[in-house]
Length: 289
Image (cartoon, rainbow, N blue to C red; front, side, top):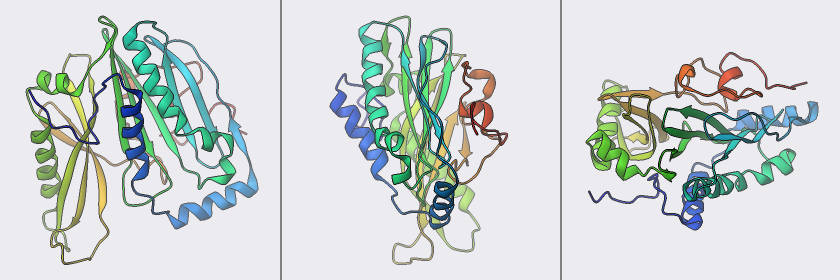
């Protein structure tokens, strides 16, 4: 199957440069600052500094935590590394190193950032696969964040591609994108201002315990009439699995919610708990002052 290549497609070529370009596209979008968040951050700067530094913790699946960084400005960065030594594991670790590099400035000098930079890790481990799922968010408005994924096949020591996930699900990238737009248009029906969904894009996937694929997509909603400017466009996050859609509404820079991207019972735990284990309940990271 020839799947169209987009800047948001999750596929690995072995090229660290391609991975870096994809991540830069993710970080380059939606730079409009949220004024309320900036004000809160300014207050936080005057009250306290960093809370928790980088650390390593125990192994889950075939990876350990490389970085767990949380500070009082709302910068939460969670990045693992694979402990396996094969070529596929090295490919994943190269991609993780590129991801980590996007946050080096934030971790080195958080006071110089707007705060609210999030890289939240969802470690979904199955009997065969390590699904490394990241919810990415920043101090910006106009979107619900983004998803970045890496799926490692421990049995064959290789990265699973988006093309393979689509074949497993018996669908295509275009069909998923059109489905996302149709789903959102159904949600928008009857709104006071005429809105329409557009620009659906597959941003990642995972392979679940039952061997089936779950996909993550972004999709914009904006004025249905391009000549009208009644509302600002908004990028939504959607989850597709089992022939059904789910709207993921977590805006981690602004609020905490009980909803998780992936159910907690499917996620691996670590000695130092990840955000998914303490954040949704309003808790604080280990070591917080």
